[in-house]
Image 1 (tube, helix red, strand yellow):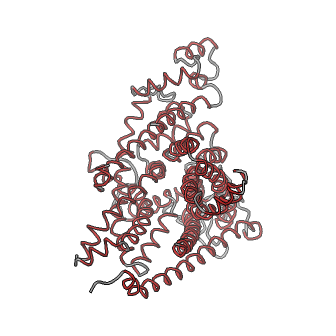
Image 2 (tube, chains in turn blue, cyan):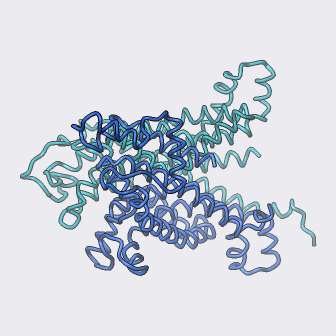
Image 3 (cartoon, helix red, strand yellow):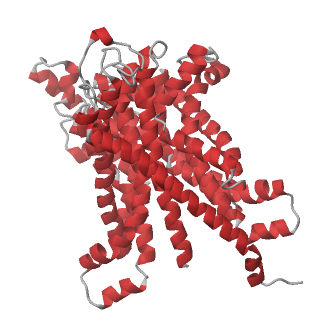
Length: 299
Length: 295
């Protein structure tokens, strides 16, 4: 809840920090004073700031985020049509990240300080240091231009079209995410392998697969979800860049474009939507904790 | 047949000792390699005027799109500028951004975290609630929003980092402070009647520095990547100033016929990032060892 308040406050202040008058930018430099006054009054910009804030929050709660200066359409509808691709990209990227991280993390912890571990650690090091935009360009060059397997850019139509178009972008995000997940998974698996209850499971004669998959992995996943939520911000940041590289019509691309067109209401709306998105995803993570860990369910 | 815990430990001792030794050896190797990579790139950046064979912004259309050769170690770009020289000069910009955006927040974050952890109570609640809000917010979105106000360039990046960067350090320091507060020497300092300022600054902070430094190694990688990403989007360092991310962006239209324009600066970013991460890993492992011995 304080997070939501903080975010509305920030995105509200944002538009008031803009140098010059947004209305002047909107109507053009040479508009007569009366016109500006009139618009000011109509949009409630001549009211005291706290009152404006309350109106802003009230409107935002009803899905009214103002009007885009450049597109002359409600911000909510402009942003609304961009949410889908962004969510698809984030979800697909997270999925790829997890699918890559779980087996590699297990291998790395199981054969600690041996070849699988060294290879995995090298991979995580490079993937962590890899700028997402450059990785995206490498993937485009290899898989789109040389091999022709995937399209260079775009979003496609229909579910399969989205999957087809977003595979390379999602892989770009997924590799970066995997580098963080593998590290935490490895560390917590190594800790868990040393605990007494795993010793007890081994003593009962459980197979190695059972020890790792059933008894260790489930515990390690809890800290992995924490890492996932802590890095949500970075993940979204990565998605913004990747959308720009692959020309995906998502919120990130809209955000960057709006900077160049100086479309402040859209920037304001997007900041708010991104913030709410993070809060919602954190909520999902809490539910995932409960699904994995019975102790959380009881509490 | 009941084995005591003592016997169990003794049975496992050689294996554990071997593992500890191989861990230690690896932490030395990673630290060494990391320091070497970072030192080379950092020195190259510092001594750029003597190392770079050409001026980074010298345009020469006659030599454009030349592949890497002895004349031009990393080739030339679409304007015939020597990529090696640009990469070396860009190091100055990127390291400067990385260091400022990491270590200024480290100081402020440590202070916030130490105060919150030491005082506890409502001070702690207020500061940590604020930290939660700041951490939850997607950083890049915030930076871009601030750039919308102040316009493209480094100013926005610096403002955003000063507003937000401290949060992770504050959370980390506060957690460590809660443990540290209960230690004997802290109680002794309190018993001696030292001022709170003196206790926090002189007695607590030096002990809190190490975990923060380890974390800062990962942070500086992310900050350099952030600066490079912003420049790639055209929102960060403005042309013609050489910056690694901006150089990758310059070359993206020539992916097929001149791969080196994007690849060379990209490789340098990865090398620096790997180097810094290795230092962080090496330090963390050493520290973990010491912590384990201490118990």
